[in-house]
Structures are given as structure tokens and as C-alpha cells.
Amino acid sequence: MDIIFEGIKQALSLLISLDPEVMGITWLSLKVSGTATLISLFIGIGIGTTVALTSFPGRQIVVSLINTGMALPPVVVGLFVTIFLWRNGPFGALEILYTPLAIIIAQAIIATPIVMGITLAAMQQLPQKLRLQILALGATRFQMVWLLIKEAKLSLMAAVMAGFGGVISEVGASIMVGGNIKGYTRVLTTATVMETSKGNFDVAIALGVILLLFAFAINLVLTRVQQRERPR
Amino acid sequence: MTAHDPSTPILQCENIQVQRGGKRILDVSSLEVVPGEVLSIIGPNGAGKTTILQALSRLIRLGKGDIYFQGKKVGADMAPLDYRRCLAMVFQEALLFDATVYANVASGLKIRGMNSSEIVTIVNNRLDQFGIGHLRDRSAKTLSGGEAQRTSLARAFAIQPQLLFLDEPFAALDPPTRETLLEDLNHVLRTSGTTAIMATHDQVEALRLSDRIAVMNEGRIAQIGPPAEVMNHPVNEFIASFVGVETIIEGRVIKCERGTATIAVDKNSKTKSAQAFPGAVPSLAFTGETGAERAGIFLLEAAGEVRLEELVYCCIRPEHITISPGGRHDRSSARNAFPAVIDRIIPAGPFHKVHLNGGFPLVAYVTVQSIEDLDLRAGAAVIASFKATAVHIIRRG
Image (cartoon, rainbow over the protein chains, first blue to last red):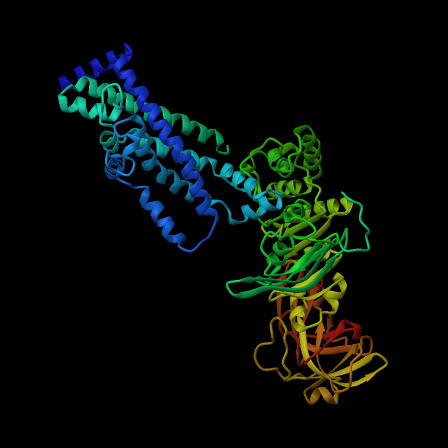
């Protein structure tokens, strides 16, 4: 038990003293996962909305693919991103493997199907006739889509939550395509893995606590927004 | 609003057709609506009421045909978006946005890019007009059914539509709410002079609001005309039964002179009554039975131009049949008076629906008070009478 108490004590002092290394890792994690989530929102909401509002041959298959994508294992994404960015791979010339950009790409690939799947479900839950009602109000196609997205905003908030929560806590892809390079591509999860394997439980616990705090803070904010939006 | 010559139609359509799943679900050869007119479209479920509204408003794609708005062909002389911006639509469900009542009523104006100061005046006006000013800042999701539908109507009227489409707007409301909203809508429609097309399955609603009624069946307009004409002179037995004619009896013209026809109805003749008389016809023994009746043939007198020996349907609306006690038997006052036995009495709100067997089935509406006063009950012998003008004749062919 000592090891845990000591670890927590040490972790708190690292946090309170704003240890530069821990802060650096935290900041990088936020930047990388935040950017990846943002990218996934554009692609996910765009494609999710399109699939929800149109009918085309093979739509069922596309929907199944999106739903499968929601459970995409991060290590598989890491593997393929690594292969593509490998020196001799198709995008090797870009020389971005083991950079933060590589992690952003991998995390965006993980988050996009999650955002897409939730968007798709949210848009399909809207009343069928709402589209006609919006058109009858004189909306252009673009205005109609925008109003529908606004109408689904609570569910889309859940998509943000799920997407960000998924990538900030993900470790497999980040370590594979980022390489856990100190001060460059070391993020909260990869650092936690490394410190744990080295037996530095205090640092590992500190990082773990930060991760938990993030998860908690983000969910708190989004839940509050949702609660405020909900009818009284 | 543009001034428009009231004699030329505001909306016109030619040969519009809509297909779904390879099946033609709408086929309207022509329809014209004049400015300020309120047209109701009635018909059973699946008759195409919703489809015709969505086709006329160009919310769904037409398989064939053209729509003209104020003489301009939509899609050629006028962009579909410009056309849609001249109209508004209210559905059975209020379909409000997840926002305040104010924002909902303002939404159509905002879509048109109107600035907020102009919007405020218009929206406040509409909120008051529909009696929902006090709900202005309430979230739309917290409204009752009636309040939500008022908001939806206010939203539709906010854009000052030149053409309003209503798709069973009151179908989901309880009767008292429906009643007050119907009155308010009627008032706003008439004071603003808005041209409206309303689909409903409730003929009472149609009668209250409309200048004309169109009856739809299987994707086609089966009859269109002023309410009294459609109600009292349906062109076929389908429309007759749909507009509330309960008694539809097959007969044959045996005499016609000076606008009055005598129609023979066999006691075994088929009837299209909503609830045909069950079982065998019991033998009736009334004093004053004519020879023909004893032979199982009944003679009805009807007003109308028919030819001798023509096969017809005799349609009698239940409110046109009078029931008097069987004892006081006076056959001379009304042209048609038949001794009958009450088969059963079905409560139907303010009146009772009395199913009679006068050798052939008849259905009459009797007020609750009269049922008590005359002591009517199943098995009682009465006289059912109706004027010759109450019998509407449809040719059978």
C-alpha cells in the first residue's frame, strides 16, 4: 500500500509545483488530441450528415462500415499509419513518422468513425418531416443541412465527447507512430506506459491523475452544456 | 404581397403525377386555386392528401406535370426556391426547432435574411395573433400539443405566405383545443385573405373552413366543389359514404315526371350502408302497408332528373331522416314515410345513430333528447320519413 500512498504524494507535489516536464507532456497531449478531434469533427459530421440525408445504392454497407469503424482498434490504426509513413512507404517522402503530426493523423483516423457514427445516428433520429418543414420555411439546401445539424447539436456534443475521450486515452497508435520521444512526441499515455515499466510509479500516477482530471473536466463541461440545453 | 387579379388562379397545376416504388400515388389532371380561397382536401388514409400537398408545394419531386404560381411556371419562369419562399406549410406534428417559441416563429424570416429589428415587430404580432405572447421565451420542447401547433401556425404566418399548405394540422389535438384553434385559424385566414389548401380527414373541419372541398381517392381528385354540393350531391357511392351518407340503397327508376322520380327498392336489394342490416329482414305487419310493400318492393320518391328504368343508388343523409312514433301513422305529410323497426341505437356524441329496418336499412341521426322523449329503443316500431329532396340519386353503371 505504501507504494500507492507515496506515489500519490509524489504525484501531487509534481502537479502543485507544475513540474515543467509533466506540464510539457500534458500540453502536447491536449494539442495533439484536440487537433485530431477537430479534424474528425469536420470529416465525421460532414460525411455522417451526407450519409444520413441521402440515399444511394450500397448505403447499408457504408452504414455498417461506419459502425464497424467506431470500434477500430488503435493498434491497427497505428500499424497502418506506420506502414504508410515508413521511409519506403507511400508517404515516406513526407518524413513525418515519429512526429506529433503522425500522432494527429492516427488519432484523427481513430476519432473520425466515432464522430461519424454518432452524427449519423443523431441525424436519423430527427423527425423525417423536419426536412420538408425546413424547406417549406424557404431554406436553401445549405440552410436546411445547417439547421438540421443545429437541431442535432446535443447528440453532436456527445460525438465530441466520445471522440476526444477516445483519442486522449489511446496509447497504442501514439506510441507506434510517435515513438514516445522525450520532449517531442511524448504524450500522457505513452509517458505513463514508459514510467510504469521503469518502476517510476509516482510519475506514472501523476500522469494518470492528470488524464483522469481531463476526462472528468471535459465531461463536466459538456454535461453542463447538455443539461442547460435540456428543457426544464 | 403582390396585388393580384382575383379572377385568375394563384395556383394552377396540369397533369401532375408522383410515382413511388413504381406505383403512381398521385395523378391530378388539373387543379386551380383562386386568391383568398380556402380549399380542403378530404379522403381516406392513403388517398394521396399529403402527397398532393407536398407535390403542389414542390417539397417532393414531380414525376410529371407542371405547377403555375400566379401564371408563372415553377422551375421555368420561377426558381423552385423563389416559389417555396412564397408559401408556408404546417404539418400534423408541430416540427418545432429546439429553441424558444420566439426563435421558432422568427425562423422563416431569419432564413430569408431579414434583419432582427424587422423580425421583432412581425414575430410579436404573430405571437399575439395566436395568443402565445406569454410563451415567447419558453423552450419549444416544453409546450403542450395545442401551444406547439399555435407556434407552428404563427411561424407559418410570420412569413406572410401567399399560399398556405396545412397537412392535417389539428389531427393530433384534443377536441376542445382543436375547436379553439380552428376558430383562430379561420379568423386569421379570413382577415389576412391568405389562400390555403388544407388536407384533413375530418369533414367537419373541412366544412367549417373551406370555400371548396376536394375529395381524393387512390391518388386522384374524385370530386371538387362547394361544401354543400359535395355533401349533398356526391358523384359516386364512394364519395357518398365518405362524406357521411349512411344510407345508400340500390334501386330502379319506375316512374319519372316533373322532376320527381319514383324508385323501386327491392327488399333484397343490396345496400352500401355503412353498417348494412345484419341477418334476414323480419316480416313487418303494419297497418297501412301498400300492396307493393307487402310484395317486398318499396317505393321511394326522389327529386332529380333520371330516365325510366335507370339503375341508381339512393343516398340519404342521416340528418335528413325523421323518426316519429309508430302509433301516429301519417303517411301523407312527407313524400317518403316507412314503418320501421329500430334495429339498434349507437351513441355518437350529441346525437344517436339509429339503425332502422324498414324492409331496407336506414340510418338516422336523432338527438339524445328525442331518444328520451320518444322513448326509442331497439325493437320499437316507428315511422321513418324523409323528403323527396333529401334523396340524392347517383346513377349506377
